Image 1: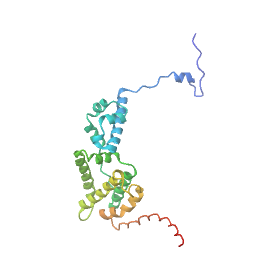
Image 2: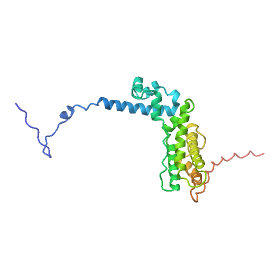
Image 3: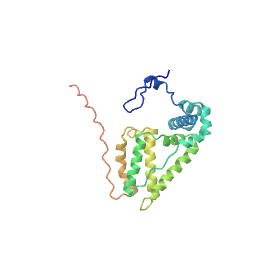
Length: 232
């Protein structure tokens, strides 16, 4: 006997009971979707390990373990550790598209603040690998030269290459000092504090008219009061 129809809902369609919902099979992922998910995990793990330990110590086996996959899939999807490194370790140039030189100075300061706020894994992967992989030195130099060229093209006045190079050196030095060397003061200062102290230098080097003056550095904490000497 044909079962009775389910009662219609307010919209006129038949209602669905919990047992009906449970009987609907879950959507299965395709092979292509599983591959893309595995590739994304491998890229994220490689980016993090290259930044943390450098090229030499970030083995294919360690990257695979961090990505919860088999080492053979790393080489199958990316060819080699070198090819994987090339894909994740990139020093992209900062934006210098503002209409005025003052705007460009602020763009570069904002980019520096971002690098100081969160460790830039792509940049740190290149910097840490420079100690064991000579090719990383070439890559870092080429990336910095590209940034220097873009910035120098926007500078009016004498020695634009030198001015842009000094801005780049200050930027990379600040990143290395904070994230790689952990220099006192720089390691614990807020990005806003570092940028505020560097703003006059960036404006001066880039030729911004009437650059701001440097803020006063924070005063050191007061020394605790010495105990009173005992009476003689």
